[in-house]
Length: 110
Image (tube, rainbow, N blue to C red; front, side, top):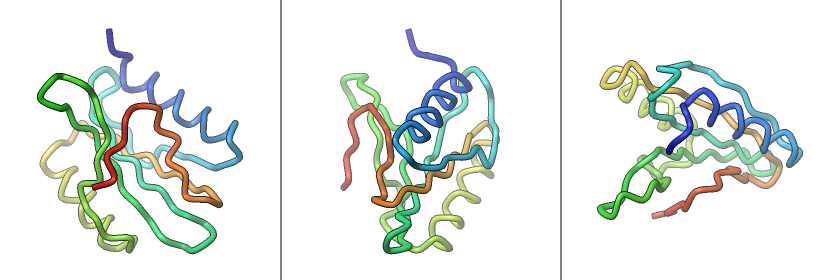
């Protein structure tokens, strides 16, 4: 059984805080089943990464980089397009001195 999105996001934010980073929900989507985008800022070099949920063919939940740019403006444009397509989407921004994403599920850096 998967957690509802609001509980999953709260757990992510807590992991970030416990790890010494900072996280904030910049857009709330559907509390029960909204998908999530996680934008990560590496404070040491001021680069960004974006992670989005995906499901493999075997049903496993993974995270992928839907936009490979490390520029914030490019990632923000991607997020705007994603919101137009899916108005239930959540957006969480994470800042960390080492650029960690704090995701516990598998991450495919692509």
